[in-house]
Length: 599
Image 1 (cartoon, one colour):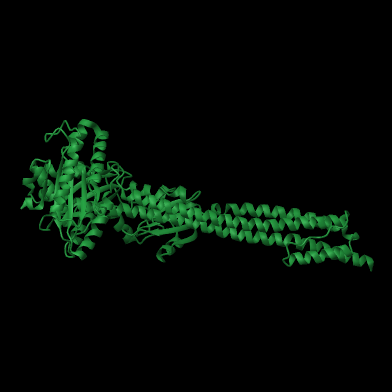
Image 2: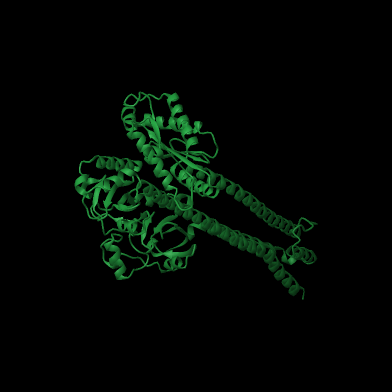
């Protein structure tokens, strides 16, 4: 009976030790694993989603900026005057020279990515092109960038197209109708961009998205337009397309002339997510070795394209795997120690073990502060001491976990503040011209729209001064581009200091051309501001040896003023100021003109 009792106590002791020591550890490991997995997954999703949305915003900004730019550029008077001539009148005419100079100047705003600027007549014939060979005389009437502006009367951006003449060159076209003063369409202004500028925007954020992440850009037919790690997938669809669609896309140069089976992968789950407008998913991609990936999806506003950022799930959860291995190793050690101790002292434990068992029961019930009283130095005393150490470690682990959670919460608050600061700095960079540190064209366009609506409601005047530097090309040729940049900086900062009202806006309109937007200012007030600007530039006395106007830098200014109404667009204000500035140049430069001077 005694042996049976001892055997029962020994068995219960071993069982109790294992339960007390290992189950809490397993629970803690399981909870920690689940928490860590969820945290890592959420963090990875947030990083991928942020990168996808940031990239989509960058591409949208690029498309929106160029659509607005080509729309404004199409109203430059020199282009309409050239297209209004008959083909015989155009050759070697002053209008041809002016239009050619205008296109060349426009193409220089981005000499890396802009391939050419061209004018197409109403028959779709290329009549003027900065890339003269082999474009001039080419019939482009079948292209969507010619037909769409004529149909809608709006600026247009095409899909990415493969070049017929240059291997591996992918182009993106922006176009806008060219109108005369009556509003009649005379032709189309077409800009050809190297599409690598968009592909670079896609791959820029991959490092910030996380380790081994990659980015993808898909068009409305789910065709790969960009892929940061698998360029071989470019211009293939994620699932096979119908044969008639493939034929149509090949005719439009949006797919290569390969066999149909070579023009698609098989990502059906991704296709389903895109069709259902999901913002994220977890799926394997056959094109990347069937790895399971976390994928975030963002969609563009101005094109039916999708930006995807993906990261292998194993990479995101790698810390969890190491944690599991460490926990299993610790589990094995503790299990071995507990079993050995229980067998060693089982024969000698009776009452002390019952007492210790009661303490263990209380500890497992949640009283983590309870400790065994050590009344001897034998095995029972050592067991009590071991239990106390184990209880302390578990209590410390819980406290450490809580402290880590608090620290992580504090880190997230700091990260959020940094992100908000970064967004503020990005907003400033987006609205400032990088060279002159005054407002850029985008900021000008947004302010003009806002002030137009406000003053239309209030029926108050809105004035605009457009000016550029006389003979600036000669200045650049003589003093060099660095000298030209310094000249533009001085002019911009001088005008910024001359225009005092907070509501007034000084902006770089393009190249050596600047604008001053004057809300609640009539024509008389705008003329006073123009005179102040002219005098301030005189006072700067910036030397201009190669000017045939004066030996210092001078300005030609155009002034327009109007009371906005809902039935006219802000473009009339820009067009009037531009015409007035052109008149100032025609009258000898170094002066200002108003729209009244044209009548």
